[in-house]
Length: 450
Image 1 (cartoon, helix red, strand yellow):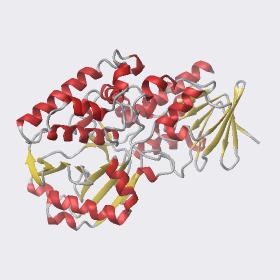
Image 2: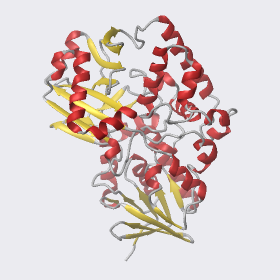
Image 3: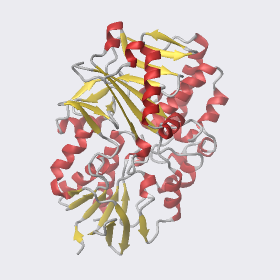
Image 4: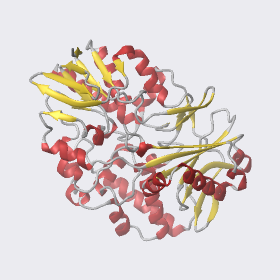
């Protein structure tokens, strides 16, 4: 016998849980169906010791992410700043250089080249309407070329190009040849500029959660109680007049007046729809792959790099670990270095296996921080492309042609089916902030129909 609710939400990430809360507050009965054995989606924490958490998934908040900060405050999720004291390292040309502040000392020509590129990108990004990127004055031209093509045409120095490629990997978890210039510009506008997306202090990597970012989802789900159903992967969504039937892989059926699908577009496209989705929506989901990223953690008895005046932050051309942060707990009771493998490096190392990743990570960390880094007490990593119910992180990217040809289907409801998830956000797409915005918007759209 079918179970009934006013609204069924598919996916218990932050977007789905926020949508469920918003509907519940308006007196609607809600059920949340989650494929995994846990809530949180692309937020996942891991306990190293009692009350010592690391985030295997998304982990940061930064300025202008007002919804996320307000949610953290409401749920009493305590924050602390990412460690930035001391000098940073840049590894280029086979050697590590120390520098203070946010700009590495790699020569005035590359710095001028990179600075000019940032200024151009920020200026162009302001011309991209966040609700309709396809309406940008040069949308057709910008969407016909990759971000890599723009880098080659617009930047003059090898070091400058390397820096912009690193920005693409760090922000999109993809290579700059994989997404369009229009998508890069939309994303830059969405996040408030290149520097806000890139920076730690004053930027998107500013603050961390004491109990892990997944604590947001866990506390939201706790308030929803039995309305959240785990181990419920959705196989089919059927619309008949004003009734929507959602069927799981196990054959359970849920009947509602509306459904919110709050999973990444590539996973939404794997659900069977009856009647079939409109061509534009289906073609869109075929074109939006998730990024490729592996988070790698080396745990030490103490953050020894701080004793040498280092912040733990590294940008590097050394394969496969191009970006490193100090990810130690707030009390510094142990030392944790977090390294990112992204884009092509992540795909190569995903195939190589865990032991090869460990060896490669420690090789890089030793080149950056000396022999002390070669002997961690613990190494662990998490490959998000291997997560069956994510298939990549941080979010989806739009290859050439996707925004202008199919972008209008991104948020457009299909009958009584509505779309949420951070990829559907206008502000801070790809971040926790964007997930919250999308859940609130989808819930409002449902309320207007119901």
